[in-house]
Length: 295
Image 1 (tube, helix red, strand yellow):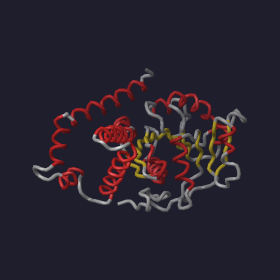
Image 2 (cartoon, rainbow, N blue to C red):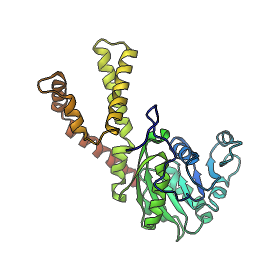
Image 3 (cartoon, rainbow, N blue to C red):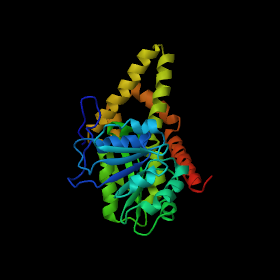
């Protein structure tokens, strides 16, 4: 099981082996890119430094002023910032929005090193679409992380494109292991990864919203309801994280026959949770497929 800190976050900077990560460039360091960057900057991570990053605004680049482990360039100040950043990089992470990926790839294609690995975290952009814009000898790997990566507790699916070797996919897996768990999957599973873990935190937060609202309707004030629900979710997640038992077993341990929990669980199950989750994941995958088609 993963080692966690006192506040429940995972200690960052843990990689499966001691191999050094090569020179890395990151195009875009917004929410997700920033999480990956934070993991790579952890002192425990052996990576060739400095890490090159690009931002759109000069103000965002200035946030890294004085950092010895990061070199930041802004496209606002330097129109060739992306091209400069990728030169000499063995790993290039595309942290831009899906509709920007192809334009960025075309922009940097001529400056990529032979043998470089381009990593895309964009939903709905296939490796084949990216490979079509790149010279021979440059590999593409897709990654689907989630927002808990910002605290080192992310879940990331990794899938290599046709151009990527097993070693290159494993390299990307090691990079994402710095911000949580990284699982290698087939590319035809990436949309399902997005549906399960990529969007998964939103489902948990929706549950928290509805449970908090129900607690308030049951007579608790806002602060009381939030405290009860939040700590229940955090505590249950940590209980599972520190256990080798399945969720079903852990649930049954709380559910005494003919008890109060059993009545609540039966009511939820009568609401068709299984079918509801199936429909929700299918809708998520369907939207990823629509994005792939440019819809």
